[in-house]
Length: 195
Length: 234
Image (cartoon, rainbow over all chains, first blue to last red; front, side, top):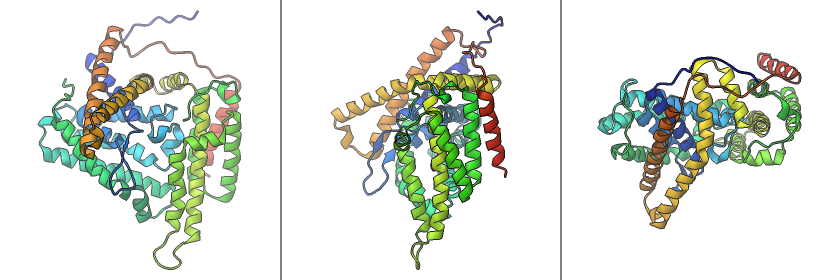
């Protein structure tokens, strides 16, 4: 039997706690993929995935928020059914909604950087509301910009065609998700790990 | 739903690293070409890959039905024009070709998903990506695999409890924030307990991994991956 002799290099306590939260949040993003709340007067139902992308940036901060999103993308790429509609596989990352998926780590990092002003975490409930709103709007613009931009390039559509098919039906839902994310953060029931 | 299916096909016997290489190569070259000849060659390669993993095309198409909606929508959107001639066939055809290659990429990835267990993919990630990022990515992916069903059950419990209290008749924001807040607090409770348990078990940067090795079968497959990547530059 093969044996290997080497010393064990333990992972720091802070890193373990942040990492565990990042991994579990990524799994949660997969678990809520099938939850859809119908919206009155809108063809597209409200799905909760982007809400958790917002929360990744708000609660885990720029570094661990984007690590969490990268874990989510990797898990989906190797075949764990975490993408919307129980999809999995590397193909989905290159598929028509691939641009949205690739934007998640960027959006989480951006929201985290704006809200926490750097890599040291602050309590998001104590951050002034306008800053949170600006961060979420910027994150949404990144998600839809990358999502529709990639779809337009991939499927050879013109800009307005991509916006009509891939962004407009979802905008009302986005505003509601921002409101939900703000309500969750302001409730003060979720504390970030401050080192 | 597509998942790993234990079997003894050619694809099941290959190393996950060579299969990942082929997928990336295929995607790269499919994204670079939409000519008729290229699409024909790509279709043949995709068909061979599906055959090698014994994937049922119908099941794979059904698994990707949401993506198919977008792929079907694209040519219609591209063709529609304001004013005469209302529907531009040329634009629609360009977009349909582009959609078709995406469909091929999806089918090829279905072959990987069917033929590769998660633990093998995890080992491949941890061995290919060096240092701490590789370790975190590998461990993180297996934690997601472990926690996905648990968190799905949590979300189901929350939704059932909400429905029992007529919570599903409330406003949309209220429902979304309730599911979000309860889902997140439960998940983070689990994460904090998990972190404690991992520390108690000496969670380290250098754990022992399952054994992976290239067999003679893997070398031609790796060569195919390289050829596919290079053909993207043609």
